[in-house]
Amino acid sequence: MHDVSWNTYTLPKDHEGLGLRDLATMNNACILKLSWKLINEFEDIWCKVLRGIYKDVHLSQNPTKKSSGYGLWRAINKFIPYLLKHGKWSIDDGISDDAWEDNWIEVGTCISNHVQSILDSLRGANVCDLVTGRGDLNWKILQQWLPQAHDWKIIWRLKVPEVIKTFVWLLKHDRLLTNQSKSQRGLGVAACKLYGHAIETTLHVFRECPCALEVWVNKVPTEMQHEFFNLELKD
Image (cartoon, rainbow, N blue to C red; front, side):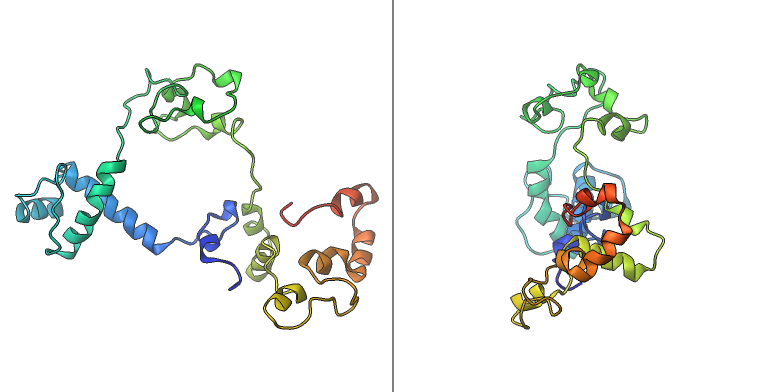
């Protein structure tokens, strides 16, 4: 497991990761949310307290440069400039906003400038046509337009012990400790111990080694063998 980068661990399970949350990112997101509340003058008790203590400071116009104060205040003060710079306006009901031609995502950005084509069934759609009654994106409409990715969640839905799921996940990432992998770390030779003329890669161990090949030839239907023996690990 240590051979997989932390950035991969924190990716969602359907994007090759384990779905672990990056604590630093989560912390920054929470502080940004608190900063947004303070700027928009929410009536939470903590907002009233901070506004009472720092009543001479107008956050939405000129965040203070002072480093003193409560830890929460210092953290919020650090993120206010970022929030003011990257914060965007939000649409109302989306009835009059063209989903492709209007800059409803961010200033200066419209979707039509970033895609090669738009499905005929989606042309002329307004923003309200792309969301559900709850305000969430309607993926049933958008999925026909979005590129299809490998469903990594299939691994975690397997009816097998957790250790096997983790093994398959490492296999898909090509991070098993094969002779080739150990050789790259200066821990021996990369050759297969059974067939020394071949490099022991992950695919060699599970498919291309004559020992493994004999198993697959007897298990994989003849009409599927050509496709099976030409698949890559990611497939």
